[in-house]
Image: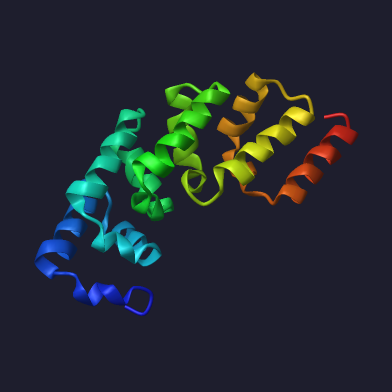
Length: 172
């Protein structure tokens, strides 16, 4: 309640119970539902019909199965609060533009769902891919690196560049 006082204005019958039941229907157990709500209590105020269900259908359309969707939501429930049109779809288009296929995109999101909203696409993600290109990574190598270790994109720009300069200096 301290993190999300608006919870007090949510209807038990219209918001809370249906959302919890829906999360369980995705395959989450009680502890996963609790963890998800603690991480992102605003989830309880999101519309099932206008926000949550369309986002899950979209994730499934990328090739995720129910267990992958549930795992993604438990890891980063804030994903469910992002706009499909303004946040999620442009990031997936960017990943596909790098050369990822649908399976690689889905697996990348499952491994590191924060990629879908925690980092600026323009100022952070694209800049780091440009850094990889400056180190002579080919597009195929970039796709392989990002689909294998997408959390690499969470490093600060300085740490990111430093890691690659150390690798390059050591001949890797």
